[in-house]
Structures are given as structure tokens and as C-alpha cells.
Image (cartoon, rainbow, N blue to C red; front, side, top):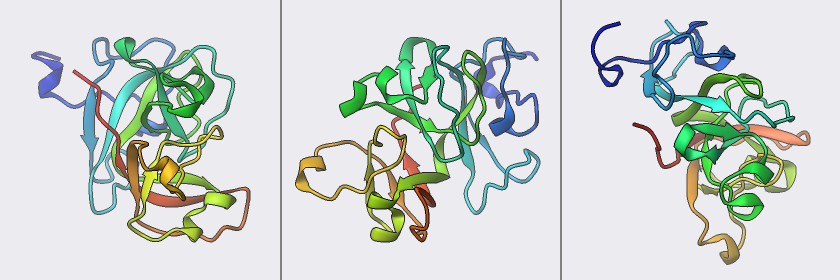
Length: 190
């Protein structure tokens, strides 16, 4: 590849950014790169709007298996390291800094891969703060200790940063429910 990476999209080794989990990056120099994906050429249907993904490294000490819609927190912003465990997040358990959303269980701990940072994404909610109990257009604040998004219920959470907006609802039928959100996390990239 010639030229600057800022002029090109990220290299997605598997074709689907949400299945990439590399021990060492296949394409050197793209750590932190943010790129939109569109069409079905990536194996991911972007819907009406493109999804935007960022190439990151997952924190080596993570032990939790992520699922689509779980929050990714910044663990080391200087080196583009994210974690799936709020205890390891910048800001800690009361104000973990959200980096984006995991699209699947990938990447595994200590591996490189992608998180979604903008566009329409899945979001996980607990029954007690489920999308079914909220209205479309409700703002979402930083997520709870189980990596689930929260619709603020009180003024106590009014000062927490908005990380997305609810754009669909889901029935609260299990421990975790999933709904569509429009991500609004601040981007940290080069």
C-alpha cells in the first residue's frame, strides 16, 4: 500500500470487522484508524447509514466474553487499548469512558480487532433499564458494570455524558435485551 493510511480505509483481514482477532496486526500502522464500512461487501449490513469502526487492541487482562452490543471502554487511550470490563476503564466504575461497541466476541484479550464507534449499532440493556421501558429518542448514558446501556431515570445521571440515542425498542424478555442505538461517543483517533 502506498501513501498515507489516512487516505485509505482500514484493512479488514476477515472481510467482516466484527470477526477480526489478530495476535499481531496484519496491516501494520493502522492502530487507531477509524473507517466507515458500507454496502454488503464487508459481510455486515450497514442498514441505511454506514457503520464506522476503529482498529484497536483489546486489554490483555480481560476475562469477560463480549457479545454484540456490549460496551467497549478505553483502558489506554494513548495506545488505543479498549477493555470490556469497566473496572479496568479510564474513569473507573462510576464514569467509564466509552470507546464504542463490540460487534461480537472478537477481538479476544490481547488481540487486535475492531469496535464500532459511530452509526446504528446494537446496544444491550438490563431488564430494569431496558429499551422497552424507554422511548425512542431517549438519551443513553455511560453503561453499568455489566456493560449494558442505561437510560437515565433520575436527575442524578443528568450530568453523565451521552453515549448514544435509543432508536428502537425491544421487549424485556430476558436478563439482557438488545435494541438499536445511534452511537454518539467522542472519537479518539489519528
